[in-house]
Image 1 (tube, one colour):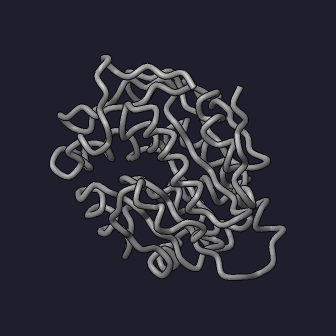
Image 2 (image 1 turned 60 degrees about the vertical axis):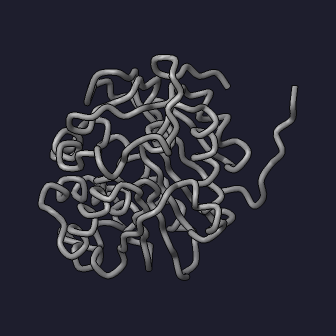
Amino acid sequence: MTHRSSGGVQVKNADVPWDEAFDSIAYLDHNYRDLQPEDAEILQIIRDHFGGHFRKQGVGSVSGIDVGAGVNLYPALAMLPWCDEITLFERSSSNVKYLGSQVDSYEKSWDKFWAALCRKKAYGSLGEDPRERFREVVKVEQGDIFDLRRHEGRWSVGTMFFVAESITNSPREFSLGVERFMRALAPDAPFAAAFMAHSAGYHAGEHFFPACDVGESDVYESLERFARDFKVMPLKSSARVRKGYKGMIVAYGWRRNSDTAIPVN
């Protein structure tokens, strides 16, 4: 796996002042107040993936997790029709506070994201305003992605959007973050994840945060031991939500029944 660390200085996740420095509202305003073309494309991919999976499954208890939820509600909305419980798992205290404020009745700005999902019948069946359903099934849990090792195989569907490559510039921690996410899923659980391609880091308000420089091959290598029948693809949308990256990558598929050993060349 080939990576370049921003500025040549390794910044690990534990080195970042997530609680003190991350400006949740500034990040929300910049990224999610409007439905951007990239997110619309991601929503189409994941609604079709999850819709296709659950259409073929029998009725049963389904638990979902969004790892590193940040201030982004649309992964939870994408899992909403099928889940009895959805955990928004997030480390930053300010992000946890925002997520908690949205559970009872989320802001109207998220309605356009839901409308994009409702082009699929399963979502439309919940109506134009699924806030009651959201309130019933969604909970917020503060935690570190690396601590998910205590919950292996717990969730039956999962998402992770712009997390593993956006919390560190350490290649090892990037790979470990993907591993922790995948191991938290039960065998055959569908998943979807998104990554910033070749990110040099980003701002949330006045503070700068590290990122790991990854491309499609890096994402594929991080997943292949844990996923089956999965795809890794660049988004077609080419608009830029900020400076310092070269595109976005989406991966989706299913958790393997068991981890596959990767041969050493």
